[in-house]
Image 1 (cartoon, rainbow, N blue to C red):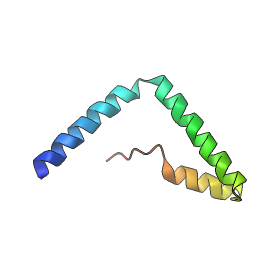
Image 2 (image 1 turned 30 degrees about the vertical axis):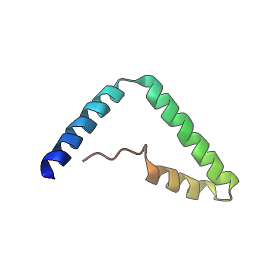
Image 3 (image 1 turned 180 degrees about the vertical axis):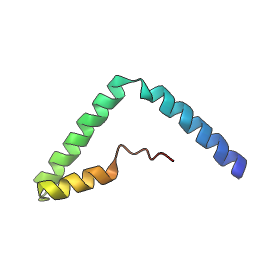
Image 4 (image 1 turned 45 degrees about the vertical axis):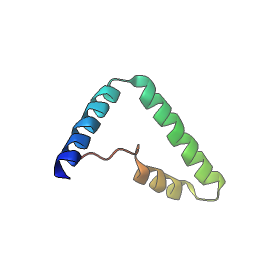
Amino acid sequence: MDAEIERIKERLKDILKALEGDEEFFKLTASCTKKFYDALVVAGFNEGQATRIVAGQGIGVKGS
């Protein structure tokens, strides 16, 4: 199991390195993040709550 986890970690590192230079990826991520924030506000969360929720989500990738 440990060897498989190590292979997955290495593959994720390769993917993150590839994405790091992809400006379009970050533009799309920013756009989706803003839409998520706006939807939270429309759903009744105040701006502070929506900010905390969105900040807690990050971009879905947690580093070590």
